[in-house]
Length: 384
Image 1 (cartoon, rainbow, N blue to C red):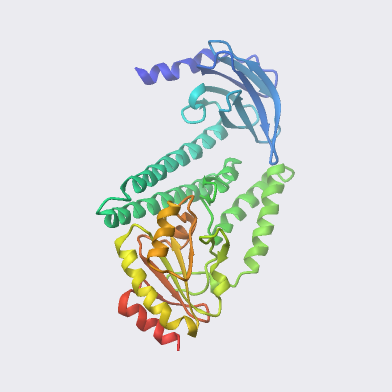
Image 2: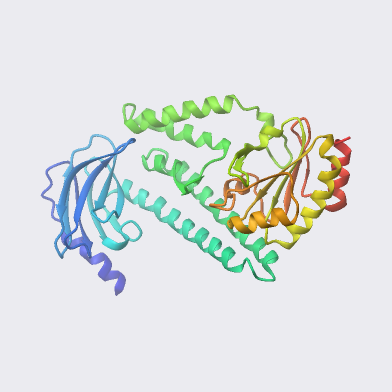
């Protein structure tokens, strides 16, 4: 019954009276006294087309003329908003609530807007999963069994990221002719993590760019994605394919993270040296044990060219720096504390810590997840 009451208000507005070839009618609950703005969403900003002050019933009606698909926003004066994708002759019905306008809403009469809702709903679910995992990591960091708990949570984190990635790819392949795919290309899980951010994802930019160029050659979003594709092509051309890292491949992944002083340091700055690329966590017992081995190896071989680039998955700066001091780690240690070095974790598909890759002087991967004596033997084989 509850679900029926939520849907019912939509059918109260099925009166046309439209002036343009697209009409948007609806109801925003709990928005009495607030102003609802109807904005045209451009690449570089927004243009307000119309607005209305809502009464206690929260009803509204806007109309516009479109000759090609366009993005619009319904934006409340409290900052809440939702995104619509209007196409010619759409007659949209929208129902939402002021307090969570873009989280739980209904839109009918617009295929493009329903696609936009689908990708946003999926991303919101992924964000919620990741927030829950991060909260659990924080709550469990002082537990005696944190080592095993952190392994499980890290695996869940990677799984959530990969599931979102697969969704985005499938969505683009199924809806490449819709402007909604443009949104899917550039969605972010957080400020630093795109849902699609691997070098090979340029193929999906190319697919959407080609489709938009054929269908809407003069559209501002077409021009933007073509410019972006051109930039990505140049970037890819400047990279050596041999340096794209694979588990059985070779080369340098492009990782740049801040050290304990906030200075950005890149893995590639050690090119030409033998590198142990190590992942760890300050509250993980196995990581701390591995640090003792690393120190022994580093002290023995640093004068012969060994370098360690160690990435922490910590989010607590004090715990991270305290562990570095306690373990006397006088090599390069970096971390993106805001999200536990999520990009670097995902880039190499790290499922647990400690983890490592060994990169020789030619930039080739010569070992993975070697610890203790096996690690020292491999280092000794290449650093003489």
